[in-house]
Image 1 (cartoon, rainbow, N blue to C red):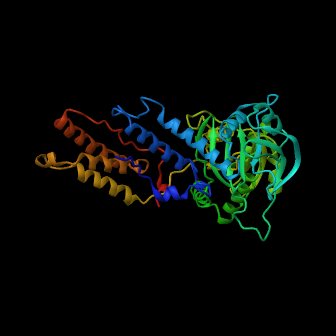
Image 2 (cartoon, rainbow, N blue to C red):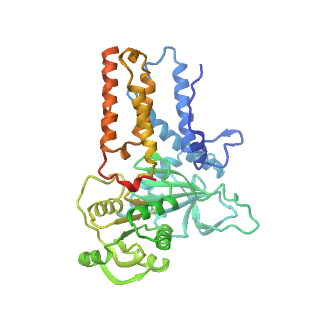
Image 3 (cartoon, rainbow, N blue to C red):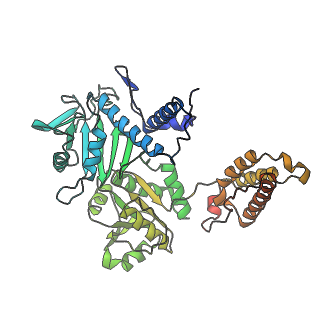
Length: 452
């Protein structure tokens, strides 16, 4: 007997991964997803080898999922150290955990650590340490990080810190994969860091929880959001806002852009807590200057700026994400409270771009209706035929309809709930058990703009 795991191969193949799957015969963890699959197979295999069949390997008995994820992240970082040429980098994951959570004179750590072998042809060493410092020396590690700046990074070989320097750009005759053995670790905020290779993020860890890096927002999703929030916005205006967002994403500080049709009125209303300016278009260089101070940049959909350094207000509505920072949650509160069409572009310190409101994708109305019709067909049989109802197939169709729950009208919700009650009664007759499903309800945010 052998355990097996099925994954979506297309989604799996799209994940960023290390360029090699082994070094000198040593198998590597190429991505967080790959490591989790290997760990779960290992746990299941170990359970099969036990003298007695295990009662279960569920989270009720132990912390299997979290342990598997953390071990996978640890193996991934160690695999990167092996590629960089360091065979004694087993404690590197814990070293970065300590680095991200250790303040220096009350300041949260930020900056970039570059991992490459000493003497790498692409690494320019500006400050060479006479005596290398172990990455396990947490306080020394954090102290040295304080000297980093944009373009000046802390240099490690996977075990020791040997200086400060930079990564030189590719020469014309160098292959694109010549920096496959160079890795960048970025300290984002307290307790949060990210690992990347060849400019591809591989791993993000927040408060000790490893996760896949958040993808940048695609241009197509941004364009769709702008068109749905602002009825009369032009393609030229959308490109202008997107270019400003892209420019802000290149900065180390992050930024918050508020796009609203009421920008002029809001600049006056928020004047005590904002710097109102003469309305003008912002170039990327000017945007870099005005985002050096705290607060948001207030824009109209055509890209005209009315105020900078805006401290946003707004009433807490229950929306937001407690795992995200104050920049994101203040944007959510302000957008939720706005009576005018409003869209906020949140650029985090790691260069990720979020847009709020997060609009559900457009769907064809006939797709939702077809999913509902299929559910009704599976659950509306005559009494004599009821014994032949395939409950597994019914609940599969129910799960499919749940994907369209946001788009259903009141009458469609009533139809779906009615057939679910019929099946619940049938199940009770069969086995004296019930499976309670969450009733379908209309969403007040739904409107015709969500239909393709």
